[in-house]
Each structure stands twice: as structure tokens, then as C-alpha cells.
Length: 279
Image (cartoon, rainbow, N blue to C red; front, top):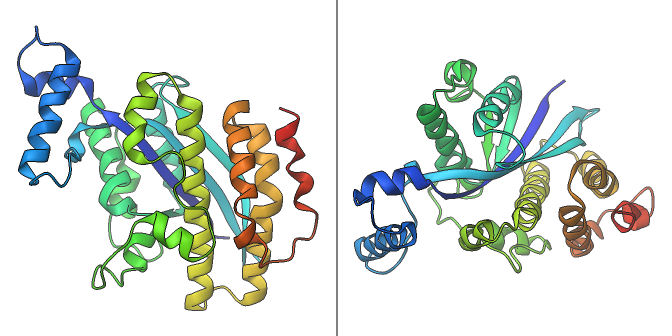
């Protein structure tokens, strides 16, 4: 029985590394970070201030667990970690353990999420032998990265998750985007970051199901069962697993997924999302 784990991270600059690179202890941190971002913009000709991967420190990580049953991929659980809920070392250790024996599903995970996890484990001395002996290698079905799958391994021009999501009737990015995470974190808005991160995980998973239908590894009937599983199980799981504010955010998000869900008849009314109203 194959098990799947969809994963997404949200990060902020590693304060310790910013301090170390700046080399001026008396300078305020905001000034150090501003100088670093300005240098990145200058190096890119003004196109981007995205920092190199060693600077990225995870503050929120969301996952969706699913299992293959009778040809369909059925949602089993969701989880959300924040750096105020458990130490980063604990999160990293648990993540490497959870990946063992599961097929990882990401959007651009090969280029961002997994290298960030590896570099954080490098910094904090968290061993990941199972990942480096299997998952990191070219093991068939070990990691399905939609960024690569939808661009034919990089041969075709790639697009952001937002555009692929909107293509199939999902909301895509709305009021929050990755560039907003650092400011939200400064204001302590972990619930907003968590809701945004989980919405990306859900859209990645639903897009993955559509791709599996496209390639023929899910039959139309199995695809319908897989999508219906998301529609019916996610409201309950969000209500049980997430903080009330994040659950409320995601309840409204699922309503905006109706153009996608509407293509697949549900076995029970979508009004089961009452789990959100009760929080």
C-alpha cells in the first residue's frame, strides 16, 4: 500500500546567518537585512531579492498524508508545524522519519523545500540517513515534483503554482504570497502563514491528482474518488488538526475551490465544513 506526503515550507531569513555575513555587531538587524536584500537586487539587475538557500529558516511547514486504496489516493491526515509549537530540530527529525517509505509530492520541492530541509539539518546537526540513502537519490516514485512534471523536466518553460492552479479552476494565490511571510512573521501572524501554507499544500495535491488523471495512472473513476476524498475529509481534518484561525481561513479557501470540486459529484454535501463554523 503506497503512502504519500504532500509538503510545503514557509521561511524567513536566518537571523544568525544575516548577522554573521554582515559582520557589524552594532548595526541594527533591520539595517543588516536591508543591506543584504539591496545587494541581492543589485546582483540580479533589480529583478529579485530572493536570498540564497542557506539563508532560509523554516517557520511553518504543512503536510497532507494520503494512501492509495483500490486505485484511488485517499486523504488520511493533515499536519502543521510552526517554530513556536516545537523546536526546529524536532521538526526536522520527524520530517525525515515521515518521509521514509512515502512518496513525496511537492511543487518545486527539489529546488527549494528539500534543499532547505537538508541545509537546516546540516546547520543543526540533525542526521537524515534514510533520506540520503534512498529519497535523495533517483529512486522511482520517491519524489513527484509538479514543477518538473508540468515542465517536462525543465524542457518547457515553467510557471508558478498560482498559474497552474488557476488553469484547473483552483483559487491559486490570493491575499497572501511568499513575499509576505517575513512581514507576517514579524507581526506574529503564524495562523495566517499556516493557512496560506496549507492552501498551497491542498492545491499542490489537487493539481497532482489532475496530473495523475492526465498521465493515466488514475482512472477517471479513481480520480473522482480521490477528489471527493479531499472535499469530504479536509474540513473535518482542518477542524481537528489546526488552530481555529487557520481552520477558518481554510474553510473559506475550500469554498473558493468549488469551481474545481464542482466537476466531481460529492457523496455527501460539502456543508460538512460545519467543523469550521463550530471553532
